[in-house]
Amino acid sequence: MRLVPPLLAVLVAATVLATGCGKENSNPIEAKLKDETAPRTVLGFPALATKNTTRVGGEDEIADAAAVAHAVYPGEGTRRPELLTLVDSGDWQSGIAAAALMAPPLRAPVLLTNGPDVPDATSEAVKTLAPTGSEAAGGAQVLRIGKAGAPGGVRATSIAAGTAAEEAASIDRFNTEAAGQPSENVMIVSADDPQYAMPAAAWAAKSGDAVLFVGRDTIPAATEKAIREHQQPGIYVLGPEQVVSKKVQRALGKFGQVKRIKAQTPVEFAVAFARYSDGSFGWGVTDPGHGMVFANAGRTQDAAAGAPLSGTGKYGPLLLLDSPAGVPAAVQEYLLDIQPGYRFDPVRGVYNHAWLMGDESAISLATQARIDALEEIVPVRRQGKSS
Image (cartoon, rainbow, N blue to C red; front, side, top):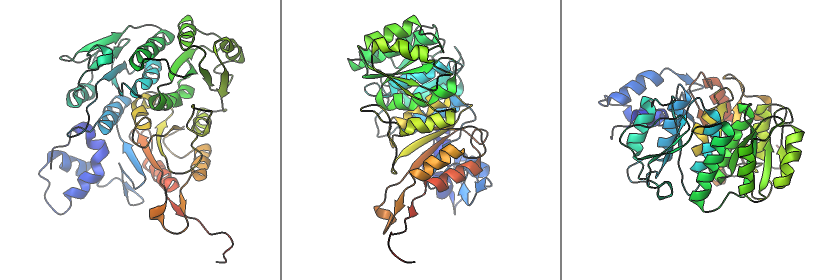
């Protein structure tokens, strides 16, 4: 068995445990994982994966981002990334805006730094992912945004540090140049309220639609300029009036048609965004058969870290939990609405799957078990038949 990189451990624990049964573990990583995960079970399921969920169990967003990048680009016999994006872990606005770089053509996942310092998880990810270099980025292997550092020995290009609006506008311009045209739509989010901005990262990674920032009552000059460059795009304001005011919504009208997606809480807003569809914009996930990503609303950069899971594979929205323990009523109701069912044979059915971002301090094992149950395909009683 090939040695599994440590960053992938959070994704392959169930496989490791299965292959380790009945024989002595010679692989030290397998042995460590077995020791750590064997006693940690809920309802008979392993701690890191259940039949309908997979946990990216990093202790922080930096580890989560590295693990997700490996999940999307697992190496050996598959395509390597051309480019990786490096963002300061303290700069949540740029993390969310940079999620758009995961969409075609760049397909560049976000990795996180501690300002100019590159943590081991990120450095190892850059090394093992071995980006080939992006022609759109002048042959660079990594794109540094703002104050983010880069490991030595890689070709790097940079987006200069600035305000949240300025960095987001620069990211949008970079993506436009790579794609050869601006995105059809733009998302307008609060620069001051991260929880209402988090779901934008997932859609940006899938669609390439720009994420641009405003104040509650002001539109920064950099954001105005960026919207103008899209030439009358569809403009979607994310969040209620208390985070982006009606005054801003009215002012945006001179740049294109403006629509708002809103709900009273971040958790409810993420559900509303998951349901929303308007032409080419929005997930429109109102039926079963989808992937989805869950994150704790208090871990903002998990939105950027998990965005590649929304923009590849089983493509699906980001849903938020307001605490590690328990599934909020709005999320539970939504999952029940889209829970898969079958009448005759589950093999012929469709399935939902959930990625969970973070360790038990972000999402508890009991919550994971509940999400697993809500994702499960269930028998549907046939109408008109007596029991």
